[in-house]
Image (cartoon, rainbow, N blue to C red; front, side, top):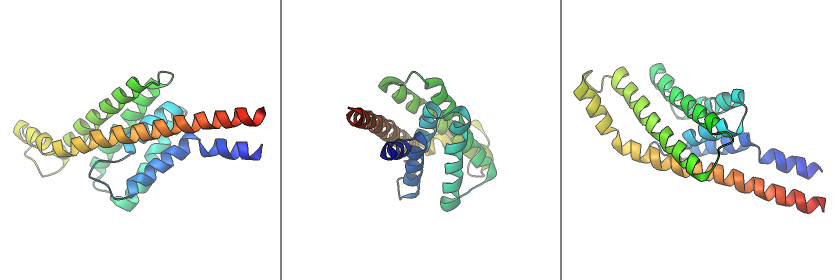
Length: 178
């Protein structure tokens, strides 16, 4: 029975978010990170309070090791992930391959739009004109590719491994109770 509790605790949603956060600390291509996948997963598998707190707390802690640029940028970056949590909450009870892929793509697009608007608005890198905004978004396209690929990869990895672990757990539990 003790092994059963330990196994169940290991496959808790929070453990999958923590593993995802650790992946943020290893070397990776720019924007190829598990953060949106963690937020989406948290929204679908945690209660609302945990869904908002756990991914943002992990993001904040990992930011202490990676970087912490301006407060304005962090507000927009974290805000985009809060929206991704909301998308995950909306998906509760509707989890299937198509919905998860669609949610991941929407999250990637929102992150791109929100954060690059913030880069244009709060940094001196671009003129505060429509042409400057277009230039900002154009220069960010290579990062968008990595965002899309990273979000799809990590969303598949986190949701897939959690589903697989739960499947194994229930098979193990069924075998033990026979």
